[in-house]
Image (tube, rainbow, N blue to C red):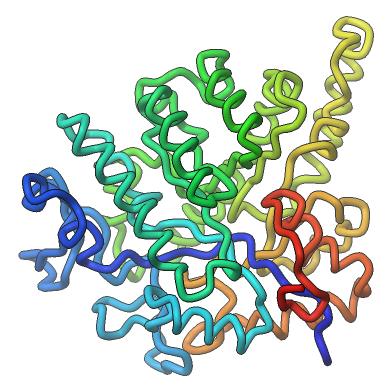
Length: 395
């Protein structure tokens, strides 16, 4: 079919190259930044920082298309599809799949943020975050209009987070990456009024707040993940699936603890977390709110469903059966590929269909009018994307 909707992929990742920090930070920091070393036990290259072994260099990345090795997770950088880390290769892949733009999230910075926070040198920590954000601007330079940048922030420091978010907004970023597990790092809960200045700044800047399920992990979480036997498919399926559902708590707390009420013009995005549970969650919140006489006890508040429909968005990629309810929620749902993670929408050694096949299937099922919201209009509203023609090019 001829696609007339400029598809926006609202969750994709950048596999950070090994020289991202060593080639860019001031010389006084070059020995202290994230670097790749050979792990003594596995003989495989891993990232390391502050005396900690983090993720493998090839972790979170896709294999070359068509790889038939039977393992969707590459172990060595030589096995990684260049589109995981090279912008021009990524653009070629996007073109092949009919994807006009991608929202870019980190891998190492997102999932190993705890290791950055654990460093004692405050300036070094900030330098690592700034360097990553600056690299994003460099990375998208071949076609900046094809990418949506989301700023990583030093979430442990509210003042520095506001400062970096403001700087990134001036550089063209459209959103900020935030963590729903701040309390697990010794900080106030993400819905606490302590963070109101941060949310107010984001609202004033026109930035979205993006809660990715992988952000905010602790060192303990990552240790469990890394030490799980590679063959333990059950463990992987459990941890990842429950991880998707963890954002149900995030959505519920944004609504019930008043964050949406206090910041009515601030969009919140639940990323890499799926859609299927959302109708039940919102119905349950409305039911409990009503039966506890919320409308009369707190007459200034909206119903939970009203807050959700006004300013909260979620994403999906592999779901099929749950999408029967999509027509009722089409104004708050966006499409993603999760590229290049090992269970993303990419054909090859995985069972996944290609993104263009999934898009075509859903357009046939729901029609272009509805899917134009899911594939493009909602993301364009959240991330302030303008002047895109139906064919995907700039006007």
